Image (cartoon, rainbow, N blue to C red; front, top):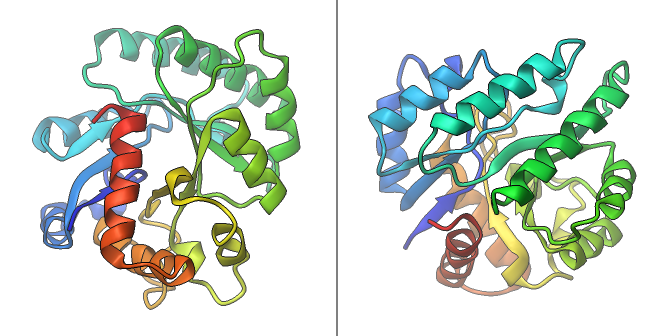
Length: 256
């Protein structure tokens, strides 16, 4: 049984002490690929080093995370573009988007950086991985204003409504499902029950948002199995079917 973890921050310091063991556990759980979202220029070398160490398993993205968009965001975008020019096997532009959860100081800058990276992805025919926190209306409005209405990608760690999910799918996006689906008060089960498996991707977003029964602990890529089991329960299908369909979705979207 194979799984593709479409969103893992395995290169951050939380894994410095036991990263190899974490990867071995992921392999034992059936994880064939771990997709690594980029966040900013400072962390990018760590991501690149991990890809170089595990080229058959770790797949890189390039992008600037919205919470790292500050006054110097144009410098971040310049570094992003320079890194792209020398990069190999980039599977997506991400993670990019809008985050209005804690700080709305740089909303205008976030919007400008998001649109820049979306256009960049369209120019290079790459999917985009969207971080949307308290920002679905803003993102949908911005996408609707772009002249090129051809989109591919995923709303990672989906936190919107069923209406938002249908809108995202209509635009050409997948829905990224992580550990939150296992939480007692999560609305994701009711949303997943209403959308086809062809639109679903699995992710952990580790080291954060671990699934039950690991809440309060560090998340890791191997825990994808608990997310898949919950999706199988919701869709009333076998774990094998979830594995096959979500793996095929990821292969097609990210050209793996």
